[in-house]
Length: 597
Ligand SMILES: [Fe+2]
Image (tube, rainbow, N blue to C red; front, side):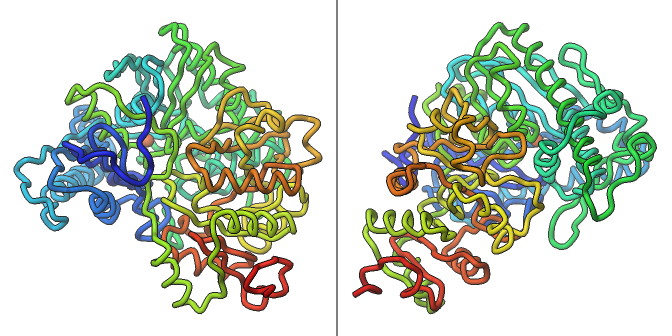
């Protein structure tokens, strides 16, 4: 099995499937042609509202614009209103606001069907030929992991907060079929357990769980006995101590604050009785210790579940998806803590990836087609030509040079080696939460002060959050304790002890990094940049953080230029152009032919 080249189809596809993640966080669309993913994008990258959770109309339009929509036959939505319908009905009858929420969900489903049947606006000629499929949320997660993996047979696990009244599902994938063998239903959830403490520690926004994971590295798990009181696992059945939670009574509400979604509180006053008052504006050692304790309890459940699934399946290969599968600290320990020997984690393990999963589920599981695709990279978003980029540069009055690829790579690598911060905007935008070398901000990891400089000049993040490295795949083993390629920044591994002093800016407090190994085949220009930086400095590693300030990752050249000009980035490598800050062109130490001539 192999993946298609990222930019063009090899042949005219006979059948398209549009996958949609609608009315969940990180709404998204994905287009599958003859079983191969050809386009995928989150709605937030287009409407510029972080984690947007409505109908992904713009994303659907963007995906369909990349194909011949007359060939669209199926729309696959990663939610199924009929899944666990009676349980939903009983809950709605028993709780305040339940009917309103159920009605809202039903209305959302109608919207999705309307979208599917209003595709004529997008140029779909024969709507009668389109079939709409509702794929249960966790079945879409499972499909996004297994059907995108290189494995013919594997255990498959999906863990998140909730989706379609379920928080965990596992099964076995064989060929083009996944058999679901176990699940955990509402109100019990490993993901929500983590969310409750994330909220308690003062991180209320949707998707903030990674902040608590970053904080945990600074603490000791001295509260582990108390945290264990909240959750336990027997076989594959996770159970919450509901005395500490409120969601089973009042649901999980999403509201909006300062343009970002905020998950309503899910923990009860008992949590503060046991762990003390929630932190106000300051985070102290006690809070870091609580975070470390929660991470430790999460890992106990995670590995207990995976070990149980290994015992049940006897398989050595594992595929993971769901928001909890973005816990890169736990993921980095799976090969140590379980008998699994090969791992594929869907890079868009969050709900965005369910648009891919729903489409692949329909192609394989519903229509019965064999496998022909592996998701080896995430470059499935929009791309822009040099002509479009030049127009933006000229329109913005930018100072820039056009360079051939070797010169662009050389100039950028030299700027980075000289301590400059570079924007790197190339090719198709990444799908999923991580910038992996096409919409990235890059810097020198050898400089211990670079983390503070990046925060002060561009990112303005909490100081306890680490920056992550990208490394030339061939050199990964020299710098990190990883035994396998790690192309998606979803696993944390230790920096080799003898290398910690060489890349101090990316080693987290616990000595780990959430690294990306970069292979020539999947991103040749970024690979060349890392190689050239290595030739100049002896270290083929770069700090790689997402190309944004406090906004969704930039998509267009216009957004990239805007972010470049409003922040304190030094240079911007965008397409074939290297742009400079006003006044820095001739004085930046960059030997640019035009400037030096
Ligand atoms: Fe999910």
